[in-house]
Image 1 (tube, each protein chain N blue to C red):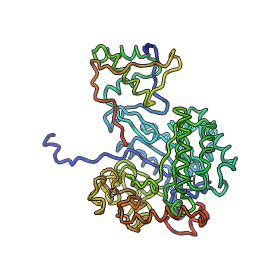
Image 2 (spheres, chains in turn yellow, orange):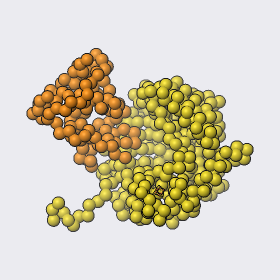
Image 3 (cartoon, rainbow over the protein chains, first blue to last red):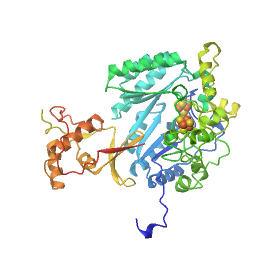
Image 4 (tube, chains in turn blue, green):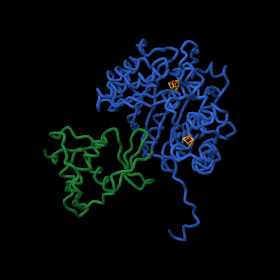
Length: 378
Length: 117
Ligand code: SF4
Ligand code: SF4
């Protein structure tokens, strides 16, 4: 340390991950989608130039991961341009897609642009395909896309969201992933945000379903070993473990919505009383370091009393802000999934409800019509 | 079994590069990054699927004016293999079995890597 630098306040590191949610448009209508329920009311999508500015600024701040998702990102015709720029700047580039719209031509262009990785999501609980097993069209599409990406030299990495109406088919889902030749399969239990929160009752599995799914996964894991790696992500509600959401608010992750708002996590847009900085009006540097939004829940100083006195506060920062808000109406509350939360009874009530099979509500599918009619954030 | 003829390469799931913001070599993979220490960086830099383990060792010994690095390099490559960071070039006769780490001289071992969130 020298005195000449003492005037410079050491700055926190910049973000490591930039997630570009390039569009809310999507050919699918997944009832578990985490996008905001009122996505149809979002402003116009960013122009290519705006995205390029975001990519350059993030890389300058040290970000190394560039993810493109949506909606279905392939509905935009400029993602090749974004990948190309990101790759040139040294980003690891990852496309998160349903595979719908991935033609040979586009794949070749993306490969040429330097795309590093493709994550293919298995859909289910869509209007067209309520049942993955009976919907051969979906399966055939995945098979085709997986073969295509494999031929282009990409490993096949599949993400499948699990919920009440598909979890009993897990054995068949894993078998299909094997048939497709996947190297990685992520089995992500639904996290209840956006449309998934709206559909929570219809999507939440029973404890028995979940236990069976874990057993099935273990059997396959033992059988497949390194050939196909399976990651089973336990749901917050059942694990009762608050997660350090996005590795901490404003610590490593920065996401940008289709209409240009910078967020510390994909779903923060639903939180009330916050101003979401627009990437066209501010630099990412200002947004990351100075904006009230990114400082709002940074660190642990803001934590409520329940968490302040808890030894785990550095580990989980009090859990997910969006979950706290959706469940309690207070974004500053301890995440109710934590057994120490004064609101934890809300979680037990939701779990108890899941056991009463008879009263399950019908799914509300994610589409612009429903979005406008519902006119709510979650 | 000897490992010296095998040719390690960076696994295609990872990208190896110098990261200015970290002042370190890193391995990038979907949604993650491993920050490597100097020795790990120097070894992986040479894992190009062309050089054999023997050649990598010779190269490092020359570059760092050291000797007897075989055990260190092999131990690191064993760990890197377990982590899936590397794969073995198909031209290699067999997948090597590598002896357990036995210490060794020369490279600044400070633990191979630090996992970033
Ligand atoms: S979850 Fe389904 S509806 Fe939502 S963006 Fe992904 S593919 Fe589209
Ligand atoms: S009380 Fe707060 S800090 Fe402690 S475990 Fe629960 S959420 Fe985490």
